[in-house]
Length: 428
Image (cartoon, rainbow, N blue to C red; front, side, top):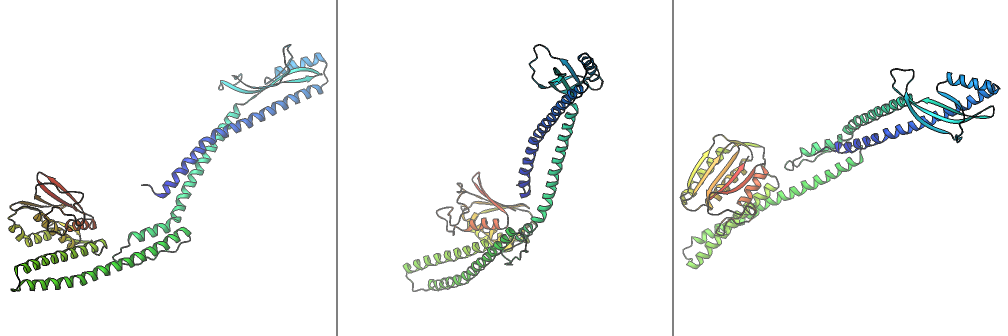
């Protein structure tokens, strides 16, 4: 995952590099064309000046020929020759390369040449001039190199400037993000965002403030509902159960009435358990528990095993314990106690009489293994109101509560079936 600045900067750099790669040869060709045009103009001017200067001398024909011969010897870059029979009187511009005649360190020279017709004493002559363009190549090279350097300096400057500006521009956003990270719905504390001079960030802070206020309001409503439901529902259920207990003690009940009353009592007890479990799930979903507590997991486990000892003895289940001492974890001790009890009770409920249960605790895992006959459906295992077996008398919420407790405390739970054994593992 990349920061926003990197996502913006990367395409920008690629675009600039593409433009730079295209611009250097284009710039070279443009400068080269301009330079050649200037050289051609220079050569034409030299040809015109030469013809004008020689004509101004008013030399006789034989003197003119001697002067031309002397000119050709003294001006190696220009030549004046009489026309050949096959001369077409056309001007031509071209580039020639040849070894340098005077400089040892220069092996090959390049020349921009002009071959044109000039008139001396009203007679046509072929005039040829060659201008060294080696210096133009060097000039173009240095101009291109300078352009590349300037482009690189511009890109580097823009990147540095963009990074510094981004830090100041995105500072309000980072402040908002930091405040959101520390926000806790349990504390119900309204966040006061700093005022900014950026319209988009101002609108973001305003929208977040409204959203947080709505969430706090909904959270308060849900919390009040769960608290009220806990008191309002448990009270009539407790009264009904108490009345049924009294009714069951009545000796005047017929056998049929007793069976009906007993069924009502079992259904009422199950309803009470379901109500308590649903309220517990609602509180976990609403984050109404503190998960920053550090406590001794070993002590809670020994306490639960002691309380559930009668259940082991009732089904004649053998228990193997491999419990590390002084295992401390971070979370909520109350929820962890519910997790331990539910896992052990689930193992007892689904272990046949004279079966086997193994309990293992290390500093990173709590594992319960019990004997079984067939694998459980892993997809439905931790869903609410899913039955692990047809004969189960549970509410169908035990493993769902365990899963939610693990999520709330940033733990993980897994299930495996190996060698006719069910294995539930909780990793801290």
